[in-house]
Amino acid sequence: MKPQKLSWVTTPLLIMFILQLLGLLLLPFLAPFVNTILGAAATDPTNGITSDQLGILRIFTGATLWVSFIFAAAWAVFVFFTYRAVGQGRGWARIAAIVIAILGLLNFPVGTILGIFILIGAFDPEVQRFASR
Figure 1: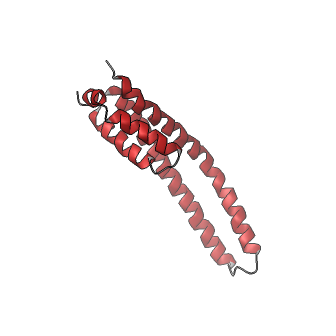
Figure 2: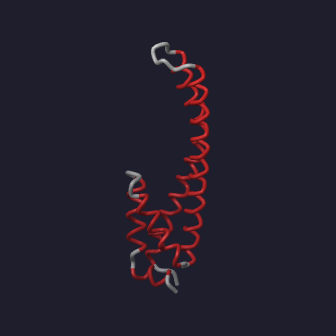
Figure 3: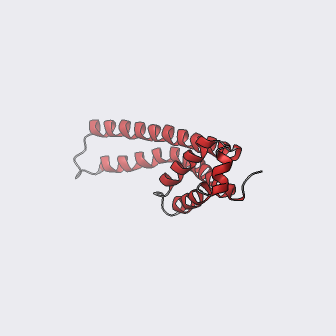
């Protein structure tokens, strides 16, 4: 039988996963926005950016967006597998949920609220027994 406060862990993890997916969907739209800003900076004669520097800056910006996308996708997969494993009562998943919650506390205000709920649920004695069986 699943503990009552297990949903205090699984529901915030599912919400975090959905928010992560929304962030992944919006990330590709940053590239045109950044290119517009860089294009405006290139036409401003007072900033001193040459066209070669602008090209290098666009390459690094694009690479940074791709690396951010890869890390965000990996984090979303990790959160999803943790969500599923917590529901199955895996011990490692409870520890992973605590780590996700602690990192989520830094993401004010939504991540903070979700992280608090996860921590309350993860440290519940019934959930601890469920995860250590």
